[in-house]
Image 1: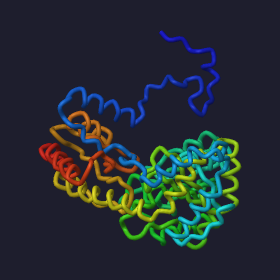
Image 2: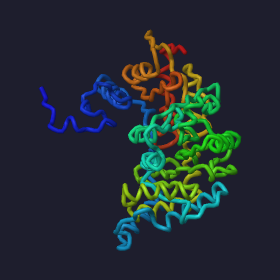
Image 3: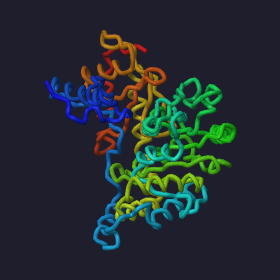
Image 4: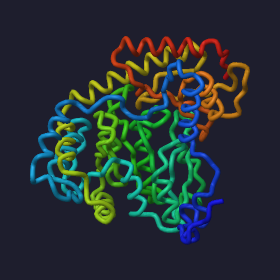
Length: 410
């Protein structure tokens, strides 16, 4: 029997209070890890087809890595970066102008973040008091919601339904919720659904923000992985900068997973508030990383090549999954394919996407991520490891062979 430490009753209520660490609920991705370990143990000679990985499978471009190596040896990069160096902010502003035609003042309308995740943790600190509401799409990235609750606020979930094009129903939000709402967090291209925003949708978001005095936070992490038309920034729409900010990341579009670099841009007062909170939360990303990231942002070719690769892989996966019964369609963006989960396979029935996912992993060594937030769906990622196109084709053929005899029901 383990004995509670003397400080067990001191844990904050926001993380469970005196009950912290005693819960038996298992986090979704921990269940996936356990299922993968079981599949590998039970079938050591069978390849695990891993479509669950949500991070780029390749290194950053050589020019970026070379720039980092050079900057590491410069004495002027040794110190604290605080809220960012001018070179990175100027590169981010130039990127926004070149890619989207959006004009930003690099001094007052851009601030770096150590990856976009901390930005979603810090932005609620700028606005949320106890009793306030953050509006968030579901499924979606949970961090802004987690920190909203940490600050005593609540989260109102906006289901993303296929019938609505995977856009939130802003008109359906109850009046009392609108009255308490301070933040609207959206994400397009949307992870995991793959939906891309339209100018009309963003215009409605701007109108909603003005009408209900809500600040908009648009998560643009996958924006350069857009296949349906040209990438669209929220800030391209008239009035968007008056109501919010957009958060960008170098992870997906530049193969810089783990480098932890991004930026918040938009309304100068919101950027300033974020920067003030950030100044009390971290001391900035290593300046050598910022210089290398600025180098990446100056490249047109790097994100283009990454987009071409993942679009090719997605098209192959759509074809493969369609052959075994999935209603698989090419997403408008991201490197995820979001498809309805089967309700039965291999003589077994599934009550939800999680059960379907566990079956595919444990019984077939095919890893995918379940989402049961707005219907039962599975997310397949094309960030698997494959050295060339021939290897991709072999993986797709094995996927079809592995699943075609299961008699999938939907």
